[in-house]
Length: 126
Ligand SMILES: O=C1C=CC(=NNc2ccccc2C(=O)O)C=C1
Image (tube, rainbow, N blue to C red; front, side, top):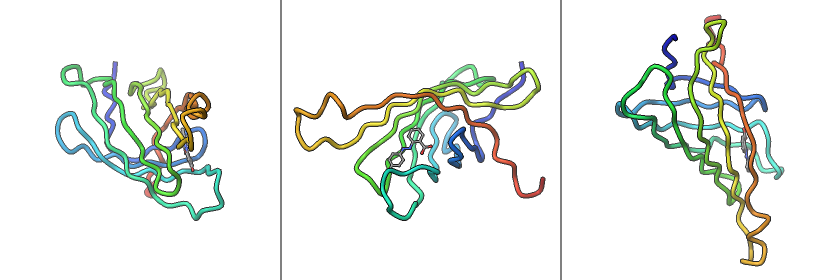
């Protein structure tokens, strides 16, 4: 199995882009530019912070949080970095999007779940 590295630029099936910078062997930060938004707010970058597992770094598992800058919501992603049969790196993730609820009575409807696949964002030189 090849080595899948989290650092760098990724794009997901929604067309959103993210950049990951490894701060230490296992912790990272970066920024996320969403392609979707429920508000007409100008889309800005949102910060992300996360970690990957300590030992087996060939196809690491990870988790990270995106703190959306333009709505009161956060998304937590968790998944694994794989090298697929064609040798391409891919991030298979599941996410929870937690939106701000005005009242505890609305708590039941404030969390959405889904899946996202990220592939390498073609760098300009290609
Ligand atoms: O105002 C908002 C609030 C939440 C958003 N979530 N985006 C996501 C949530 C889950 C997975 C992927 C994305 C994405 O933007 O790629 C986007 C805009």
